[in-house]
Length: 173
Image 1: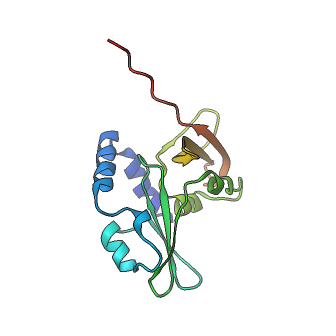
Image 2: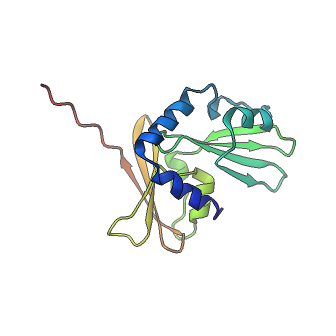
Image 3: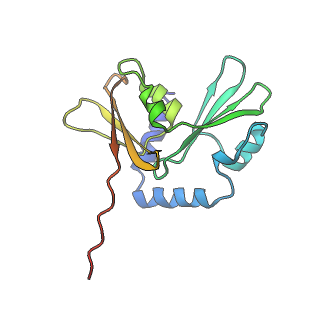
């Protein structure tokens, strides 16, 4: 997992325009993680989606792959493959329930990245010694943020939810 952090930081430093363009181009393609159903082969998924953000080896010999639409999107998918390379399940993980299962003081930055993927942004605030990983997600058709506060030792200490602000109305000329 530690090798993912430099990649994540590089990803976060790219320009917003470049990120928006990359996200738009990816979404215009033929494949999206949610389209794959149980029984699809790992080879077919990877051929359409490319390499996953994270791969976790499972005790039963299978693997869990993570694909994310962050920073511009609001979804991340865990695709679970059996030891036979066949897709067993496909789950959208950016949900209030899943974020709510994070236990402060017990959940690590590595687990956060492995389970939820890259955040939309990583920031720092004066009221907390550490970094804040912000994820965009949908909660009952409401655009929300999950702000996960990670201390300097890499342990989650706080989780806060916030509605995503609505855009300001355009001024009438």
